[in-house]
Length: 169
Image 1: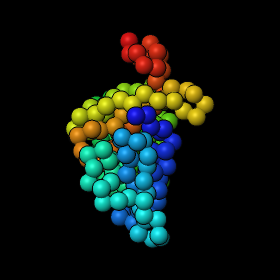
Image 2 (image 1 turned 90 degrees about the horizontal axis):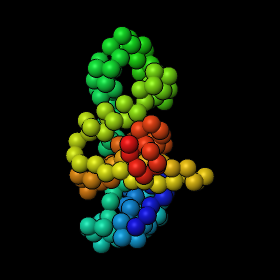
Image 3 (image 1 turned 45 degrees about the vertical axis):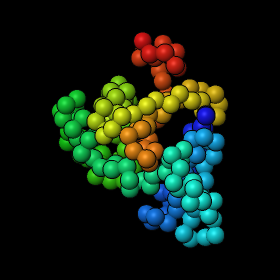
Image 4 (image 1 turned 60 degrees about the horizontal axis):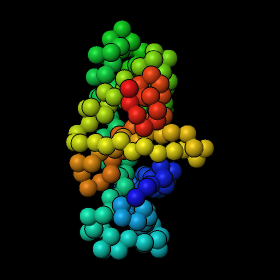
């Protein structure tokens, strides 16, 4: 079954838009449907069978993803030790991850960060090969080790690491 990244992203945004537990969403692997539930309204598309099914993956809340900075600073200590204080400054205010990724791009280390991040997350992972709305290739790395779908990273495959969007060099 194919899934649209935009649908998964929208479900993640829905789940994470309120306090933990107020909204829920499930991706049905067998149908590709995403079902929603809200404690704050009458929205309740998720049946007991959906919650129990092996074909259902719960979309995580942002608090489930452990998006702390420990992994960032482990990467910086290894790959950018001279820039440690600069990265600390980046993480001293809101919007740090976007600025950190821009910084890594300027150092040509963004893909190295994605690889490091994927290697150091817990559990097995898989690569989903998809397309953006304008038909450009997109890769989504997610864990398969838990009943909750956890998206590790999303990136556009580029040369020289990728010969084609589906074939690595």
